[in-house]
Amino acid sequence: MNILLTGGTGLIGRALCRHWLAEGHRLWVWSRTPQSVAKLCGAEVQGVGSLQQLEAVALDAVVNLAGAPIADRPWTKSRKTLLWDSRVKLTEQLVEWLGKREQKPALLISGSAVGWYGDGGEHRLTEADQPVSTDFASQLCNAWEERANEATVLGIRVVLVRTGLVLARDGGFLQRLLPVFKLGLGGRLGNGRQWMPWIHIDDQIALIDFLLRQPAASGPYNACAPTPVRNADFTRSLAHCLHRPALLPVPAAVLKPLLGELAGLLLGGQHVLPQRSQEEGFSFRYTHLDSALADLLMHP
Ligand SMILES: NC(=O)c1ccc[n+]([C@@H]2O[C@H](COP(=O)([O-])OP(=O)(O)OC[C@H]3O[C@@H](n4cnc5c(N)ncnc54)[C@H](OP(=O)(O)O)[C@@H]3O)[C@@H](O)[C@H]2O)c1
Image (cartoon, rainbow, N blue to C red; front, side, top):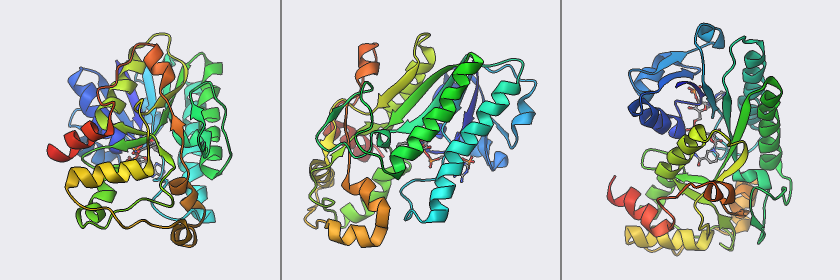
């Protein structure tokens, strides 16, 4: 297949490119730094700085993953604008461009996050549920999904991937926690009861590939292992895997003044289940956090 990716240079995009190159697909990545694409994504992947460079390419699918990192820094007004523009405006631009093309891809797989559901507390959430609460992350995901869904009017099938925390060897959330946990300075966040939907990077890639190959897939899919854990359990498992103590909880009263609204993302969570993909025949390789962490940390 001929596949265009946005955000192809990111954690998920790089792994997808590696996987799809090996499968024989032809890949293009729309990037702010097209010159770095071959190095990051694979020598055969073509980087483009502008969508107009793709006029002559017959695309089968588009995978839209671009977005500035959500938890890197506090959500000031300007940070929120960047988070919004790099997802919502970029998707708007992408769909507008698709609308002008004579040859249209059959499928748009577009990113989203479990944050779409807001802080779900103890609710068990599947794709059939509506958001439980609305915070900035939920509004952002909602607008991001809405812009992507506009491609359905063009006759393009739209799949939305509501991703949980992606656990990987070469970046993302886990790699940020490791230095602190290796020093024995890890600890639960707040009361530690918030749910943390997680997914091993290999399952994330396998699920996106599965959705690419399902001719009837459309709408939202939760991309998270079928066994979400609470923050306290995640903390215990990670510390146990590293043979370190994790006795230093970070109280909500410390996180809130430090991080402002962003603290809500860490102190809240969702008990999300990947109902649709499992019903449609997808099997997760890593269903338990301990085995996922063991794989990632013991085979670096
Ligand atoms: N990783 C997770 O745990 C996780 C969880 C839930 C949802 N997601 C979502 O899934 C998507 C992919 O995740 P990821 O972890 O692979 O992301 P990532 O590593 O942070 O990479 C995202 C890509 O987005 C592009 N980007 C960054 N800032 C941008 C900006 N200001 N304007 C336009 N493009 C920008 C970059 O591509 P260029 O530099 O090539 O332009 C970057 O490679 C993201 O949108 C993320 O929100 C990820």
